[in-house]
Length: 412
Image (cartoon, rainbow, N blue to C red):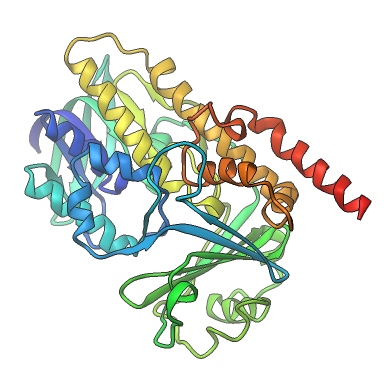
């Protein structure tokens, strides 16, 4: 078995792993990335948040992404019973990026990987983790490459950015009940040859079918469009076990988008992901840290996946660098508590979306501009900004404003 040594082993070449690798390479740290799949590869999570742009920039990856021509995302639109709640990232509370991208992840992740490789990061594709053992803070990881080659990689630290592969969560028994449960998703792509010009063909839109069920429309700059449904498991149970038939039937449930996509063939058979939320018992341990979806995933309603992936990947890389340089790092306070604070804010929004309280705010006829700007900042991913009342008071403020709206409607 061939043996290799590295300072930091990164598992996974998605946005979290690539941001971590980019930052470490920028600071002269030897790291090795192993990726189970061959790139480009399909994955979901095609809508980003502006908060991620800061992370790409700090990791030295932003300029390469800007050359790719991905569809720019300046906000998001929510539609329910022909009522529209639209958010413009330029009109949000406090400062920060006011745009990002919506992009096919196969192309987006490939661009990240290629830029890191160009800068000298070593990435082993088609390489699967088979076993991880820890001795104090050091680790030995046995991997198998597609060509049959076995490697043993010794590392001073592991950043697990394996996403849905959840390598260390599975191997170390870290999986736990997620904060949001009971939802599934189904999605596919079409080549939208008759796409409308302007906002109708550019803006990411979420159509609400009922309080707990919604549809996404994500147009890409290459002419393809991502379509998907999210709902509780009971809603999905009414449809065919044939994913193609089920998806076509679901499209008939739409109101605003009814009939628009019926004549387009699917570019691939719709993929169904049951029980999409994930959770873990802890985010770090002796010699490792979990980032991105390998740690936690809430729900796709606010496109928080890549934002948390890049934030956690960058934070983990910064702390790992400090630790390698001999500085004391409190992983609980500096990483776990920090990431948990952001997760708690977003989980409040996800939960209140499905209770219907947040939907009342989104579709209120006469919203206060100040409140809309504060909510917009959360939707842009700035969930660590405690100057924002809708971050600081996230546990109760949505409920309180929803009650005020109910009282106002009673007066009418």
